[in-house]
Amino acid sequence: ACLDLMIHRAALRLRARFELSADEFRGLYVSDAQVDALLDAKQEVTAARPLSAQIAKQWPGALAALADHDRWKGLVRRLALTVPEEQILFIALAPHLDPKYGPLFAYLNDSVERPYLTADLGMRLLELGPTHPARWMLGTKAKLRARGLLHELPDSMPAGYAMDDALAAYLMGASLGYALAMEGVQVLGADAC
Image (tube, rainbow, N blue to C red):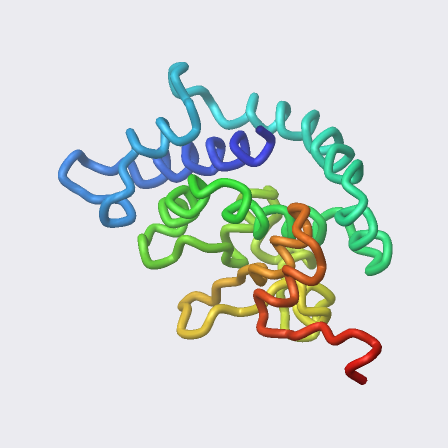
């Protein structure tokens, strides 16, 4: 729900900034109506400011709910992730949790060819300015990428980032053996060594 509110707020700001006419195709084919339907936004479009207050109230609860899952909690604790790093990681996990996030990310990235997390999208969703130090948490040597939690998508411009399917599967409850098998890693028993 918190991520949906963040996307709704970003979509409202985007619509207000560009005021698209009816004959333009935002993101080629991801329409305002489709975004509203995906977000179950049946109420009238509201100002983004009240949404920001709602999001600020919901984030701690959303992160606490994630911390109830041992795998997520262990990952965050072992790698000493900061709150913005944890939020970005959750945003990258979202398309694995619900396929609606692909079209929503494409809409906010203004291209159906970009249904993924970008640095700009992350900063807009988290309401961090373009020069905020958190922007660099997606850098090559930053923890999220250096530790293999996120990888840069090949041939993506601007650079897109995704969570490996195996890590997402593990975080969502798949066995470690299954998650490793998804990556083509064979787990050998002690006898085989």
